[in-house]
Amino acid sequence: QQQVKQSPQSLIVQKGGISIINCAYENTAFDYFPWYQQFPGKGPALLIAIRPDVSEKKEGRFTISFNKSAKQFSLHIMDSQPGDSATYFCAASRRGLPGSRLTFGEGTQLTVNP
Amino acid sequence: NAGVTQTPKFQVLKTGQSMTLQCAQDMNHNSMYWYRQDPGMGLRLIYYSASEGTTDKGEVPNGYNVSRLNKREFSLRLESAAPSQTSVYFCASKERLAGGGDEQFFGPGTRLTVL
View (cartoon, each protein chain N blue to C red):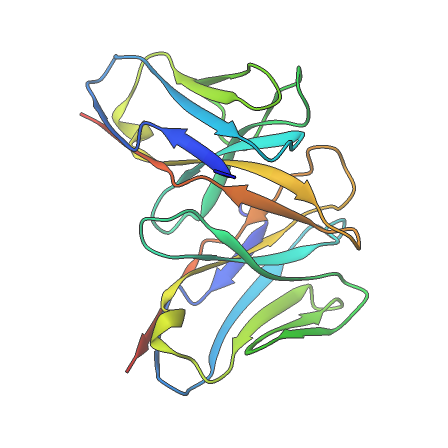
């Protein structure tokens, strides 16, 4: 049972364009929503994260938008660059629990063409 | 700091063989995790250890066992490998962040093929 649904599965964007990846969750107990970035042959790494008490978080070209009532959140990559080509995973968890577990979305393979 | 290390990087097994995947972290983290990654299915949690001496099942524990040997090391064992266990396996450890969030640090992965 996938508690975090992610779309699209793959995305092709031109250099300089905006990449948008969407996620939806079911469990209202989730209160922490990170995005992980994975390059080929590597393990995922934390990119940016948001708590549900804010509707948007921006770090450089990366922005998370969060809609608590719709149980949806999205990653926007502005001015996308070929170096952003990677697989992106959204995730959700409950903060503060010992050994708290991340539930991941299915992943989006982003390709940014030069 | 080496971060999270995993051995081996690649492994090919025959159906029914057993093996242990090793994981170690040098960041003094309490919590450690084992995931498998399959195309189109994201990362699925196999087992986790909230602290030294404790282990718990994740989403897909069948066919696996784990040992939290000490605070640094968390191993994953396949007792009788099956083709369905062909996957990329990632170990991770978790750090609490200021402000209430946390960050999982992942190893480089073990690519396992079961014939």
